[in-house]
Length: 227
Image (tube, rainbow, N blue to C red):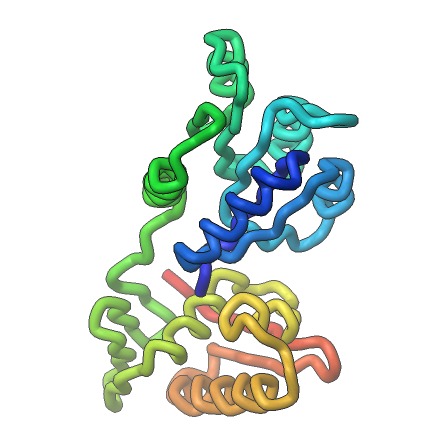
């Protein structure tokens, strides 16, 4: 699953350069020249892993935009771009809750390094062992264990299982799963998702407390007794 970057940069030339370079580094970039377009997304699923905000933007400056984002998305990782490189900018950004800043024009390689370092610090590590009802999942070995037998998961099966666990007890939209794990949404990937869901149901048959329920036309609702 690619890291999704929210890029707020009103300079069309610099924004395009950043977007293209980050995509070459295998990031997925949503570039916004108008920060007001980002505000309208704050009450949605907001599928981003990190934000890169230019400080000097029209209508809404980077600091104000950061405050709006963090009010709705607590602890969302942010990196500021500043052209002035002044001490007051750096202090203000850190006070608001930014994880880092970099002066423009920036070295793209340094920017990528800073992004990866922020993600390492802020993204929780996947536990090596997860207890799911009567089952135990070893995420390093991709091994789902049960007293009546073990199953070696594929990478995709484990990715889907971890995504469902992350959204345990909530309604999970099909489109969100496809966009986050398959990074595409068409008939064939939809059918592939159904196959993987059927496999997971089969793997968990030995514990009736575990439920993966289909919601017609919407997605799924899961109940995993995790300890």
